[in-house]
Image (cartoon, rainbow, N blue to C red; front, top):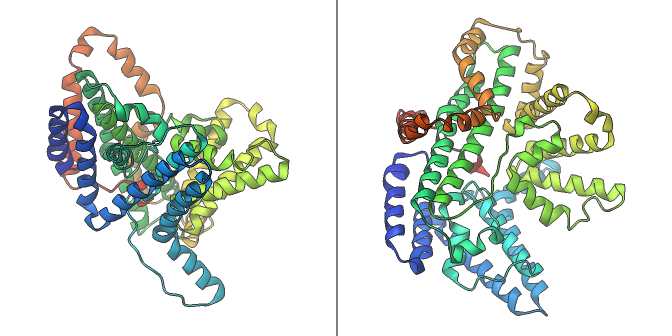
Length: 459
């Protein structure tokens, strides 16, 4: 089940909200846990055992770490092995086997296991919990129902944000419920839904048209790159908005995940604005424990390379993702070692970031390194393609309004203008009609069959 679907919007969510608010405070977490397991099981009923086993394993490890000062490191190690083992088995085993086969000429069989939806997200949440318990930053959760609710909470279960236990520990025990929270949550949800089905899905269609083109051109290759860069932003930030909005309806305040990353003036700043919960996770649980930047230059470079190689692998078990992460490592090192970049005029710095990110996402979206090489060759006129074709002109004319609206939507201009409009009493009075109308328009988009899955579901 996905958020942008009729079953979720008009059946599952209203039913869960009704039962949730009719249930006494002591039973609300149980309602959320049951609803979350139903939500997860809707698409993957055979893997409910994996979710239940993960919850139980990390729950018991957390209790053991909190109880045993003498053996707490052993229990932490066990929990890390469980988390890394799950990711290794389901996500990376075939990648490593196929890579080994390619290098050695062996023919080792592949496991071909289905990748559980959201495993990269909920495993990282579980790992952060046991590590924080070990560090003494949080107390172990003694209620299995409350801990299960934290791990399986359906708003952020399958595509983030990556919510740490310490961010919601108090809310798991006592949170505020109000019609105002429901209203604000609905508003944030509609914003995310609109980003997804009105902008992201249509941008995805333009990107797919390039792959299907019978008359590609250099200009069309660049249109593809720009459309995918915007597509992945609105797809993922739209999902995060929906998750944050749903959490708010149930009394949770999830951390923000995006802050207009395409307005960044450096790649370093870009990663402080893009998928912020993932960046924060790698910073606190990998980069700083390795020594961060408080080590000699050689070790610091090693730390950067490790973190960004893992960041690439987190996104996907393929060499193009590894290379994608290492490209960003190289750019971050470049910015550190060439301070003159920071003295460039702001427009040039922003142009550099947009160009770097746009090119990196070509690598990110490729099915293979060879396909990425072909895309780059097309973009830079090395593939023997014409600069422009009639087909390119047709699609440019058709999609230019969408591209311009999307570029504007990736900046704070729309948000700032909306705030200005809210100061007008009349506009404030018709807000409910506006949001209801926007929700209906968004619904119409995915009812007509133009829906495409969330990009980050595959991670």
